[in-house]
Length: 319
Image (cartoon, rainbow, N blue to C red; front, side):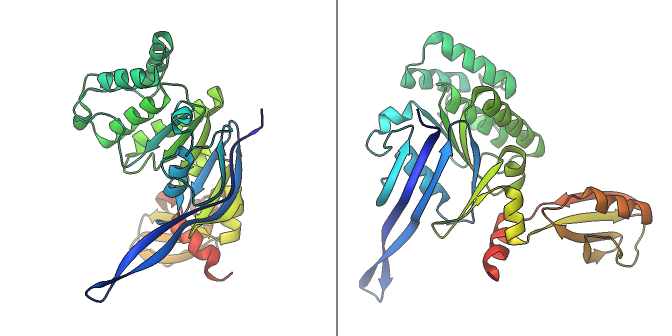
């Protein structure tokens, strides 16, 4: 068995789009959603797959699941060609799309899970054990009899993740799994995914716009832009290449002149007693906070992560 569980070689996906030209004419245009991507993901690895809207992330996921057929290149998941053996592959993968549910809208969660069990022909003992584990870890105990349409976004997301794991998939594709979730729900989902990867060795490919998801879960990150793989490595390396910055938001007891003399940071904005300081995203905030606390009447502070779009725009803006 090979260590490379997912393998892409010069993968392409081209769409033909018709656009209006004048009143009656339409011209055909070629849109290269994925343009020659190559990478490999080892069994048990958790990888962040990020990029701006329209970069080709979801198109890649759909080819990995067999929903879309590649226009060119080679693709294998667990040695299977997804587009040719989609049914066989379905038993090996789990998929969660953050903005679309795989659950039945008018059925309670328990009934949705029973249907999933029949679809995948999951043995009774295995089904019950997996369901009990997910219900406990994702705090779904009081929701099993609630129709999906009555669940909050965070509750539904936890329900979707459970449905994707009932058949013990070897690989889990997550497309924006924490989008729109509150802080508590995000923390629950992240903790669960980390434990799942560590305990079960499930391979995870995560697409998200929330860099905190990547920082807490993934050692490796890949950046896709305009259908091309632009970076593959550690998140700290991405910050260094993109020269991205985090922002320290400082609330003081009273309005003061802009904070100066803090090594490794610079003040970029002030508004009453609140000040914003920028510092390299690859650096620690601790020494900066310590310097401010020693020299200023500090009330509160928070750290804001750079948006992925900002990281990528800085990464390519002048290079």
